[in-house]
Length: 293
Image (tube, rainbow, N blue to C red; front, side, top):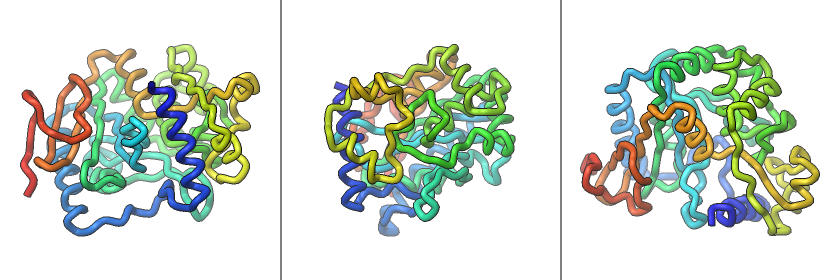
């Protein structure tokens, strides 16, 4: 089922981009003051919980373009740091700059990161608090701006192949920085080699839609020429998504702590571990609820 959903996502990316209605750039989503206030409440709850953690770094993911109808929740990941980026738990990430048609490094406060969610009625954020042996080297690598830029590829592709240096998407940059923090790599090829050896293997997705393959010819942020010829022949796409980053990190560091937050009709809900929050963002026994104002 998951493969079908991701394939549908890529098809939607292609068709929506063709129609000029997909917000994939760094312009903020349109929202009313009341809607922005809801997202700021969500950001405040996340920041308050992070303040209780001794972790130096966390992997954070948020809903971007609304993909709920496709069965996908998270589309965009970054690295949040306790200190060093100007404000507590600010996020360093790769963003696609529309005007320049390229990927760029971007630092953003946690509130700004959360405000990037498209669905202001039910927004979700996932936080993976890493143990010290993972968080501390990741924090150092993230703050090493020269390293962060060396691992940045300006040629952006939303469906970048996970083991090619031709293009990059936001999640792939996070994966490669994670790798560099442990193997000392100073370039993308070395980081990807470590990821392979460490067992990072985003699940290949079977994409049958002809629209997706045609889109690579005219959508500036969608490409297929970095994927292996045999994968293209079999219509398979292997790209990095936030859920695969989390799964990889949890497999390597089982002691990592996953937190999931959402803002919905009841207010802000937080769940520590366990099953994903429901799409309706309703609190279940054991969840922490902060009623909306």
